[in-house]
Amino acid sequence: MKRTLAAQLLLVAVVSLAACSGGAGTDTKPGSTAPGAQSGAGWTGTTNPKDVITARFQLMVQIEKLMLPIDMLAVQGGGDPAVLSINAAAVASMLQAFPHLFPPTTDLYDPKAETPATIALPAIWQDFATFYNLAGAAAKAANSMAAAEGKDAQLAAAAQLRASCDACHLLFLRKYEKPKAKASDADFDFDAALPAK
Ligand code: HEC
Image (cartoon, rainbow, N blue to C red; front, top):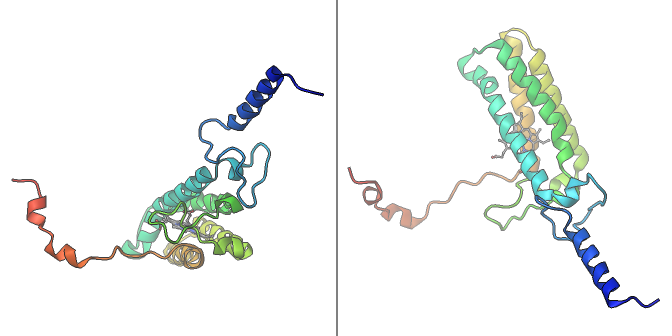
């Protein structure tokens, strides 16, 4: 059957409309399929990989904030036990959610980029079982912290919890690199850069 020109135009319009229907917040090009991409409603790793990366990064940043009074225990030796427990319980549930934010389409670390899309290393997808287990172990450590009673038990649980963060970061997070000082930095005129008094 031969389509009329009008029918063909309509088809083109419908197809391009469908391709654009991702709407705001969609960050893949229509028709692009990243490795491991799944189709179907709800596969946000396919439609919004950058949003998934932002979500997991923000989750970690908030975890770090909740950890502050827990880390301070070892330094100050005190803290409100109720706050410590509430924070640790929140960290535990966040760590439970965390490993589910790693669809293969978010394996986007670029060692050459100054600000890569993610600082999660490809090693995660090469050894996902280890990554997943470390997340589980960290969530468990956070739950133990939440349940710990008495200063000694809290101190021990806090140290274990922090060690569980470090264990995962050591294997799966880009190493922190200090900004390199350049020889020209020594010649920088700090006085000239400051506002005049
Ligand atoms: C199972 C692995 C894993 C565990 C456990 C884990 N993290 Fe992370 N963390 C990551 C990954 C992966 C990223 C990078 C995510 C991204 O950018 O895509 C990250 C990023 C971060 C960041 C932001 C990166 C930076 O250095 O600025 C902070 C802060 C952080 N984590 C704190 C914590 C704390 C605190 C804990 C423990 C309570 C913890 N993490 C436990 C894997 C983990």
